[in-house]
Length: 291
Length: 238
Image 1 (spheres, rainbow over the protein chains, first blue to last red):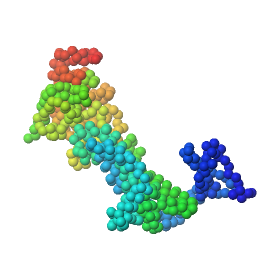
Image 2: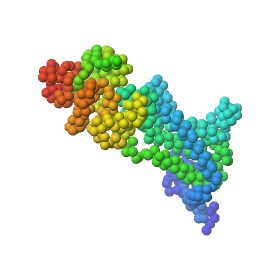
Image 3: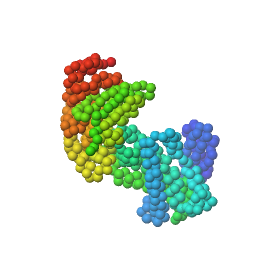
Image 4: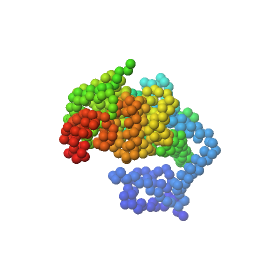
């Protein structure tokens, strides 16, 4: 059996991928995995090459799953610590963003004012805020020489929550606005006819679109729980202080501990699924007939 | 002493959509009692007239004066739409909603809503989501919701337009009972038979204009305009 380094690379069967061999830009750290990038065609092809005796990446995934299980059942204190921190930071950010975003969405649905279209368009655009930029801006604001540096919040979970709130409030407000606008079109005449005050209208719309608003909040939660760019910058990924699942995954990947990184990834996915299941169960969605 | 709501006086009222006048000029007086039916073919302006009287349509010209203040008048009337607005709530909660807006304690509001539901034959459906009711039941629920505040004046926009005979009869019975209890009723329909069964007074509207207004027996025995005669006879109006 020849040494793996002597085994010639197999040419990809697809002509575009084969052509991109010539534009090979880098080889990944995973054994036996090569990434080809074809800039002209915008084609990213990941081609797995098999060499005798080389580790197949699937082994990393299986090892990650096994390690995830091992960490969970052995009550690994570090895992539980960063998982709880992830949950605490993200849930707090989601609650705060929901308290801001849901009424804002309702208010935008019910009120007519000159700059309304501009505000809605801006809100929609802010849904795609780059996390790294948000992290950088928050970092500058809360750094020692920044305007809010005196608060001393940099590299704490509080500033991580602030960064996440900035990121997900536009998402929650925008999704909520869409849902409430449709309900408002339906309720408009009734609520006007019943002489409901503006506050009563917003209250009715929020309550009656609660299921859609839950989805809005969960969308924000989904974005926040998997976020790494902003919280890495403002939190600093400090062990026993600001390290959360996503930053730990980034750290372990950088160190080449793919199995551990994958294990943390599986825990993160399980966490996101668990929160979604729990909220859907508690709010009895899909049970009370058609709303 | 509470000031009476009616009579209502409308003078030269007009409603426009952009550059098109869709109603008016219309002048009429609405008396204190009875059932007034706004009759006419589809697209004639019945709905716009009712919505204007209720304050849901803005007049471009003319004036409308209640016997009490406008704010007071709006609180003492209710509206039932052709397509009932169904809230994402249970039947009893939907009916109780107007009372909750008035700060009535929830327990009392739900209790009164249950009575109102029983009054319109929905006692068995109190806890059902309102959206699963049939068309006739939804309209009865909307009627119960409109009547729960005991309005002095009730507007209904073709409430039986898409209902079968049985549901129409039930709705008419509820309206007659409400009328007997002192609620002034103004209802639109294109159904001449329904107008004959219910009306004390007829307002005939066609192409955005008020063609005739008067007691129902007089209207049906001797309509003054060719359009009203044609509509009563079931002829097709262009």
